Image 1 (spheres, rainbow, N blue to C red):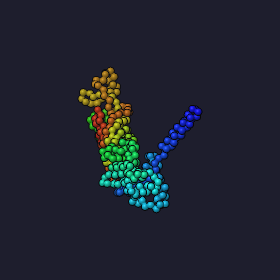
Image 2 (image 1 turned 45 degrees about the vertical axis):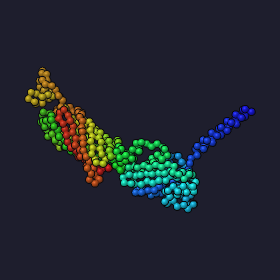
Image 3 (image 1 turned 180 degrees about the horizontal axis):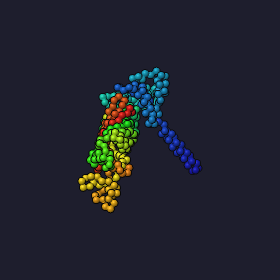
Image 4 (image 1 turned 90 degrees about the vertical axis):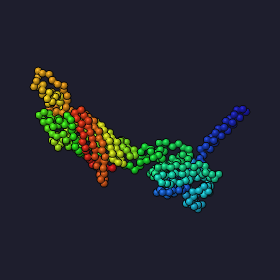
Length: 370
């Protein structure tokens, strides 16, 4: 007898638990009609469809789709063109057989987009919840604005960073709050001049029999800039630039170099700053300055004075009688891009500090990319 009673109570408890779980899974029914609009290129029907989709995404309610809503409206010959008020929505909601009606408006007011929603309880004819948000004038983000407003209305947490980009004018630029900014790509040919100063200028001007270039310290440059943007947020992009250059063709010289730069560029104004290492292929050799300041190549001096030690401290510098080696330095560049129709014209100033003398110059390029 006790065993039978125990089994009966267990069965009743299990049945009650299953019933409670099934009941918990029953969601309230909700419907969205038209959402009022002002100053936007979406009409109330389109805004209603967008709102209905975002409400359904939350999974809080069983949302009637637009085809069921339209069928029931046509069946009962209801006019919902201007049905935005509580009385009208409660009446229509009862005929649709739903528990909740979501209504509201999305309006452009000055430089703000204002999204306002109200959740109406059809059963007791009350406004259950309401939510208003003022967003930045970012028309491409209207659906996102609707989504975050609905989530806030229903007590669903929103991403704070996303909210800041949609609502705060001082938020960091991104593709959300700067949606129309295109990535400016300046890959293309580069040409310009470079000026040698200090000891480097002296070695360029020195005659070839002294290991110099027998030239002038102002040389033409020609090359190509390859670039890629590894970060592009709003009005700014971070760049990686690879620039092979040949210097001195105008003076029958071939002085190759490669610059590997990181930079930041404004997509809106075209200003740019970049810096990084530069590698040269140059002929260098060891030597020293004698008492009258004349440069002497150590190797040649020793061949002429085999029994004597080198009388002065040795230094390594440009000498065409030496071996080709890779020499490194650092370059800083600053510039601006000008536009003529679809053509981009980047103009950059650069400086290369060095113990042997600072180099500086200017380069100009062009391309037809966005």
